[in-house]
Length: 134
Image (tube, rainbow, N blue to C red; front, side):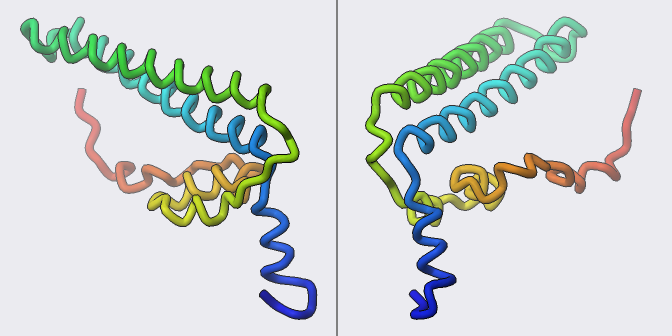
């Protein structure tokens, strides 16, 4: 912490966030995961219909993916509902919690450092050079 009133003190104030806000942020993050899993489920469903996957094992695994999507959505709903029943005076240090998160973009979203930009372009740029086959 610095003595001039800037730096760590300001950062400390910004990272001690109300619990309801944190719960909503985590709920949104889990909802994004559910949506991504749903998109993946649609893709895999199209591949199954096209005959790229065969047999009952593929159908069973697709059902597991559907269960994953539903469970992620349920957890997001729970966190969202919980956020409305927690005192806004309760604060948590999201910075310290985010230090355990290995993915920088997730850590930034969870701490609110990247909330305004919402820019996730470039996440998969290494796939741009992959050949597309028809």
